[in-house]
Length: 68
Image 1 (cartoon, rainbow, N blue to C red):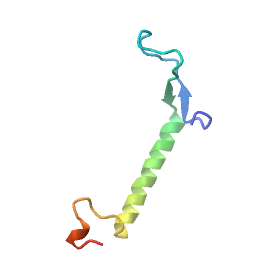
Image 2 (image 1 turned 90 degrees about the vertical axis):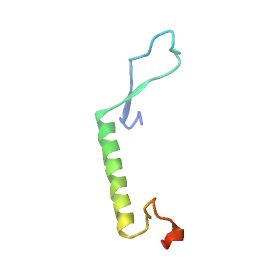
Image 3 (image 1 turned 45 degrees about the horizontal axis):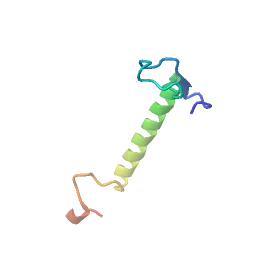
Image 4 (image 1 turned 30 degrees about the horizontal axis):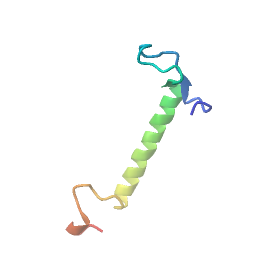
């Protein structure tokens, strides 16, 4: 993710008494945000397609109720 530019190492660190100098901290980049949004939309579209094809059963229904 770092090499892809989705995150970057952050200079911000917590309280020194709570921190371990070996630990690295990262923050998401604007590119990372765009990628996350695109992936979330891809998943929304996949769920909608599965529902439209009746592949995805609503969580309140069960196979015992006649859903297959």
